[in-house]
Image 1 (cartoon, rainbow over the protein chains, first blue to last red):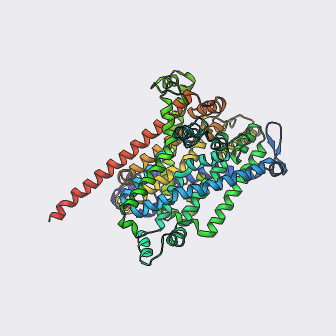
Image 2: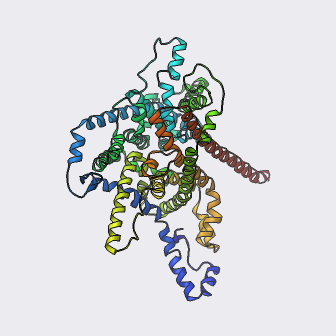
Image 3: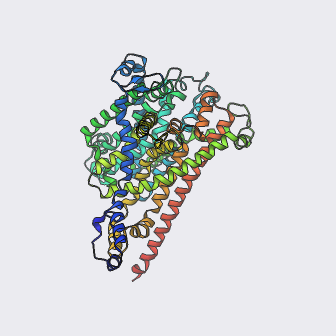
Length: 315
Length: 296
């Protein structure tokens, strides 16, 4: 607990306790007490995150310029990994996966964000959270399974094709849905859609209900209200959700691995393949490139619409 | 926009859309469950209900071992990460550097699993080398193999993965708690720990429970970080994925997938029902308390 809310000496009990204590006990209280070790305990999570998250990710930049040896790497400075990345088919693949990821973000936004608006606007405050809980359910079923389960759905003999064939809508099974970029995009949208609903829901906290009424009173139409009022107010949350989906589309290796065709890769797959090939500097270079992409995106977002505003509901 | 107040039809339509999206998200899972009970597996023309595929899971020694490891990983991660999340939420409430703290704690959400897994893998290998050379320099073997890939490294990876979720869930529950209650308890002579345990904790218990459920399920479901950092042993997901990537979908893998989904749905269902029942009860109690006053 923070010690500031503990007025010293207000408590008779504590006074007695300390008054009757032996010197050793006093010393222990001083070391373990609220201004001693106890205070530092609260730094533990942050320290953990620095040591095992921030430092490793920062060091990827250093390791990416190390020299590759047969099974490991040794200190040095070479841009070989970057040259390897930027002058091979990897760059093209990376850019393609960016493109597909961007499409997935747009689709997820169009499908998911209206739900957040609807829930915030039309459903009573108490029921809102319960409706949002509905989206926890698919989110909690492993994304691996949800991605894998798309194979029997989208495949040549899959559910969709079977149903459409039986209904007589199509004469031949659609093969464009699986092992193609379309498959990867569908998978990404289905895997991460709950996030855009959650992020949109949080974002819509910044749009009080009366704003809709004002817009209506002023005679603003639906699109006008949406583009000029809702979007700017909810922008930070929408942006956070979009970046999340975009980056995961680039980084989750299973998406192209399972749903993409031959040769479909993204940054995550390049990195894990490099690790499997014991080319650690290349893997680190890919990580560094991903981190740079993420940081640039977050910086742009922050410049455009102060992302810290998202945090207002929890602070 | 005005029409919507008049038209119940549009309101219903939007509800239908919302439920349709949830259904679309869940349908692959339901379909896998449906297939897993079919004796002839996927794509067969006929359907006979059977539990045989589940029996093959529980007859498989390798799978049972993997399941055991998964459960151990999930419970150890939860036992560590939930207190860490509580500490983090407490720290966040009192610190001046709120933005920096929350960015650091939520950042793992934005780093894809494969990237973080690779970075941690190389980090641990480097740590090991550094500490070994430190040991050699000191002339002993104290620091050998501290960060060999294995149970501990997997746990660290999973903590990094689950902490943001746990932190957010606890923080949201804590937002409803008023700090004056702690101050009152402290003024009455309670120690910081007692004020937390007897006053604050009972009020944030649903959040803590929910975050436990989150941690267990996320660990149970996690594949990438575990497989990169685990070292020698297998978990349920790593066995499942290697089966799927090497041999494609077999009947058994359908059963494994739906088993995992059943577990996740059961845990989340329990949490949702618990939350509902609790909030109903609290409302009823609040009404019961308010009634005599209103009668006066």
